[in-house]
Length: 132
Length: 132
DNA sequence: CGTTTCGTTTACGTCCACGTCATCGTGTCT
DNA sequence: AGACACGATGACGTGGACGTAAACGAAACG
Image (tube, rainbow over all chains, first blue to last red; front, side, top):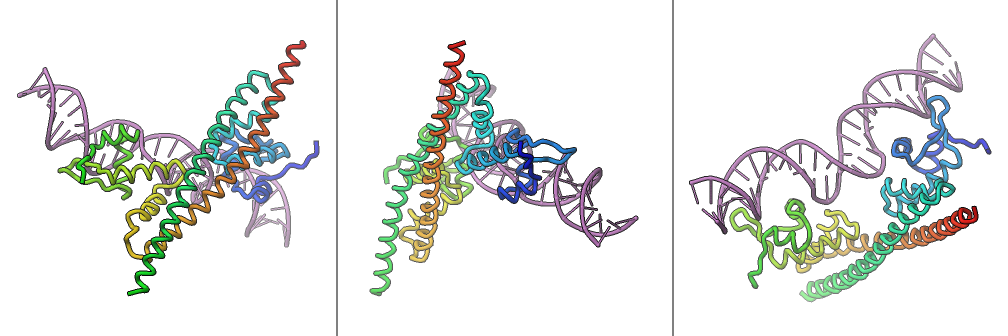
């Protein structure tokens, strides 16, 4: 119960996001800061959630997907059925991510090949123009 | 010069895309099928390009980025300066892709950890309810 | 000959993750 | 008391990648 709550601006400075983004996440039910009158106050729990939100974003999850995954945390002590379903969602995401990584690896290999060819071609052209 | 051209619908069936998408790619100058009157006719070269376009899309490139990368192919015999610039573009993309893959790997690891925790928690809850 | 079917163009609609006003209340410093 | 920053709530704008509807031409079928 450490009373270390933050204003929206303090949150923005700490996480490098805009107020608009935080309000947007709240509208999408990813955050639910307490209200002091009309003002928002963000707790440590909110900061933990925001950390996860931003992490999820960096990895290409949509906000809706992130919202579902967040239930893995605070739904942890929820009913067993709920937890089981959340695990399913996460597993599907994991499968997708692994597929994406593998595809990316293939693409990286192909692009590297193309680049090698391109650099050779460039060298050939340069050599030709030097000779001229 | 094998005259194996295809109509827009044959292309759609073959590549599993909509006519709208093909016309859109054309508007963005990623494709330029020949015209028989007003109808579009796609050649083998167009199919090769579309293959690359879809590959690029799967790897998260924007259409504009893909358009630039396509110049690596048909701009190959172009002027040297152009080729050099295209190689630069490709190098930047490659760097991005590698970074994305590494980030993805980290995320995969973290999500796997979370899943392990989730599964343990689920087992604990199941055990508790079995005991009750 | 009429009617589906395939294709064309033009143009507006959609989804996502916010950005950008406009307008308002509230708190704080001087 | 005045000025000014901070925060709130709408509401509309944006960009990418198309979807979707409208209105039309041409071809193929019965």
